[in-house]
Structure formats: structure tokens, C-alpha cells
Length: 445
Image (cartoon, rainbow, N blue to C red; front, side, top):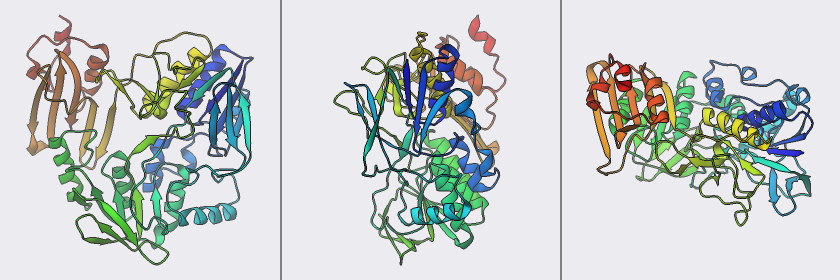
């Protein structure tokens, strides 16, 4: 059996390890566009803030591939999939620099890459193509940074924050930076802003919506977060976007949609991500925002699977097909895909969006559907103690918990997620569940 896995992230790793548990003889080829061992992508912000060394980010050793008899094809970007002939096509030239290169060469490469801003290696380069035949294929390419539409993107010191290389580039220019501009008020934007604050920079965050983390929380929690950010020295501008950048070789100023301008000597684009599927033949493999998969993580083409941030599966809370680009789901989807690729039929229960994040003095936990539509099937209960910065909101659909937002006093979050995943009916007065001392055994009676 010939297995090919496109993607060297956690979904691909989990799939490869799972396949090896059940098939010790089949060949496994892993194709990735970075040239170093797999690392924990959610932790790159910790490297930016300085609390974790970059060499601590790796989640597998360099001997990982040899240990599992995997053929690594690294530093390559896939250019296409020949579905009919079961072949993956890659470009011959390296797409990203290697962290195993000498420091002098690495420094030079990073400086050259930073000239162009954007995501190094995102656009395929021209060159000859090589094909890898497969019997079973997994697409686990993750996601690419959502691009920003603005003029002047060719200036130096404009970065995305998605990879370890991005963080390395930022760390190189930090000693000479004073005023940072962060685009986007989601998780990526906040983590970038917090990291730069920790480094002593003055940071301004631009948010198109009316409050930060608008995809994760409701307005009330968002306002609490906004106040917290401002209290700790982060300048936040809401309802505004960047239209262009100006400067002589390096970025010096950003022009905004409200006709004002901000002085800045570095910019971090953190406006979310999009599934990395530009190479996927949509006339063959069905895709929406992500690649559509069934409960076995298999696409409409037998033998071709998808997992992780590139895959679109059933959302437990929303009851529709959805992309939940979070680490735990990538791990589980990779495992399920590996099981099924190895012939062990296993069903995926569906994905659930959830996030836990500390924002200075606020512990914020969210899961599922937090901003429900105006529909009689939904019921919302909430409570707050703003003096203690405590807020709780529970969203029910047809007497089953579908989502929640918790600010501080989040200890019961795990129980609430279990209620969502297991679709346990709630027959008692729902407001009682807002009490931190609520006994959840009552739901089992």
C-alpha cells in the first residue's frame, strides 16, 4: 500500500503514526513545505513574547521519520493532484528556508524574505514537477494567512504570523522597532499584539468589527476584553481597516479607512486563516471553504482523505458542515483519517469550536455557537458580576446546550463542553446552570 500525506503538521503526523500502528509494511511519503521537524504552531506566539525558546517548539525529533520508516519530502510545495492517475505533483525548488542551515545563511535568507512581506513560499514557484503515486492520499496542508488588501505591501517589516519562520523574521528586526501595528482582532492578532507588548513596543491593533475576538465571543464579553486590552497599554481602534502602507524601503506609516494615518515601523497581519487548498482540483475533489469530508474524513473521491485546518466536516454545535481550525480537532481528525486509510473503519463524531485564552486579568473560555440566529428554537441565559469581571452566557437549541461564553470562573467549562458533545437534554430551569456551584448531577436524574 502506498500512502502519501500532504502536510507535515499535527494532522499529518497523527495520521502517519496511526497508519503505522496498523500497517507496518506500507510505504508512507510525507510532503511538507517547511524543512524542519514538526512543531507546535499555536506556541509560536510564546516564542514571539519570549516565554519559550524557538527550539522548544518542536513536537517530534529529527529522527521521527526514520523511526516510523517514513519518506520525508520537505521544503516542497504541492502544485497539483492528478486524481485520475493517483499522483501528487510537487515543484522541484525549495519553498521555505531550512532552520538547519548555518546561522549566517539563515539570517541572509530571512532578510531577503522579509523584503517581500507576505507569507514566504505561499505562491508556488515555476519549475519542473515530480509526481508521487498513491493508493491512499491524505490532504493535511492546514491553512494559509488570510491576505490583507492594501497598497505598499512590498515594503520591508510587514509580516504575517503563521509559521516559525515568520516569528524568526520578526525577532530579527525587533531591536530597531518601537511602534507596531497589528491588523486583526482575532486570536492571531491578539497573540501577536501581546507578544510585542511583552517586548516593550507600543502596539496599536486595528479591528474591523466593533470588538475583539468577534468570532469567538459575544459583544458583552468582547467589550470586557476591549477594556482589558486598553487598561494594559494596547491601543485599539475598532471599525477601521488599513488601506495602504507608505515608507522608504521600510514601512513607516499606515493609512486607514477613516482617512487617518498611524506611524509604525513594523506591521503584523493577523486577520485569520484560509484553508490551504489552492492546488486541489475542485472539478474533481469537492470543496467549499475547506475540503468536504464525510464521517470517515474521506472526500467524494474514494481513497482521498482530508484532515485538519483544510478539512470541512460536520460541526457538532452548528449541525452544518464547518471548518474549525483548532489544534485538538486537527489531532483527532488526523487520527481518524489514519485509521480509515489503514482499513480500520472509524467514524468521526464531528468538530466543536472552542478556545481558552488568558487576556491579562481575564480567563476566557468559549465553545460552540455563541451568537445564535434569531430563531425560536434557541434560548439564551446569561449572568454577570462586572465588579469581579465575571460573565456567563449559555446558548441552548431545543433544550440542548449548543454553546457558551465564560469570562473568569471557567472551572465548569469542561463539563459544559461534554454536554454539547453528548447532546444531553436539559429539562431543569436553565438559568440555574449559571451558578458556579450548580450540581450537574441534576441533569442525570
